[in-house]
Length: 414
Image 1: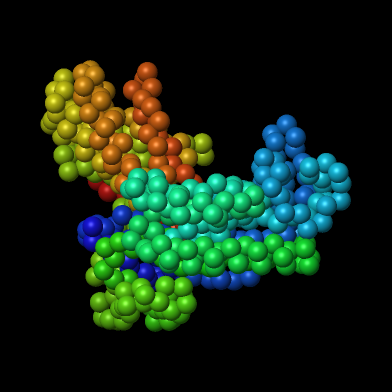
Image 2 (image 1 turned 90 degrees about the vertical axis):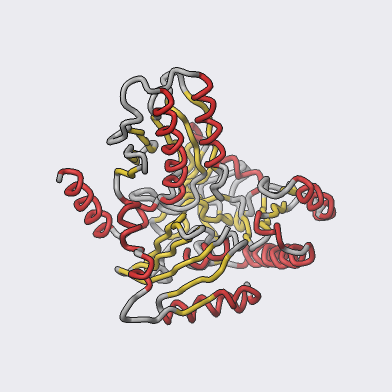
């Protein structure tokens, strides 16, 4: 698979587009002023103070700065790194401990924090609290077994190691060197934490557009085109320090007469990814509606003749295309949590099984953990996807999202 990344600055945001075989597969947006003081980013590590404990929901609220109380799951307490313990109970109001942001703030909700801090590299993740040695399930079984055997000597009671999918084409020595670097970083944080005051930031995560570059699967990557000189300089400096062997992929695109966005129609792609309706080539379409609790995707036959009447074969054709497009849209829009898909009803059991196989195969291509749970008695398909970042519609500046909705509504009415 051929991959390419486009990075541009537009409307006060830094927007990253991942292309696979020429099609935009992922879009990520971050505020251009995201480096400002006071921004709490995924991966930041703080010394927090327990503000409140709510036993009936098994949670506590930990302040990471005055007025910013974050949800903390009490299951993390057994592995907590305390910097100031004031009571004998496992967790007491006023306790100070090391926490890491595990979920970014969403709308009016403050960030979620965990005591199981982790340190992420290109090839591996070091985890405090989870002491197992794990390997990405997307690596071949023989390679997984090999890594587990070679890393057995790292088994200990303080931290664990997870080998990432990116390690597929890396040498074992490169992976080992990175693990040693992550271990040194972990030990340094653990050593300095008791000497720091409450609300200190022990580690500040890089801006999300930098993290995205570190996390993306580099196999087949042809180039990373950057449409802003300042951004190019900043990203190049990061690559020189962290991924010098990949610096040759970076390209500055500075044609003012025909900017990067026009060359690849990124604005159009973004607008389409914010619309409620996504068209299928057969003439059918998806209606994608995120809510507070879950996301609903409804499959409609639309203009397609194949889906009319009791044409089971035609309905299967539309459903199969809808399954492929739904999987693509889930990744493109970065939808997460519970996702319900209402496909067009089919009577033949073998057709339903065919649809589920195809949908499961498409979802498996997503680099973020996505699971097809089941199909209910009402023929609703349940999917869950791990939440890593905000969905796209929350990442994009409100003005852009509103304009896209107005344009979409107008085109649907015309």
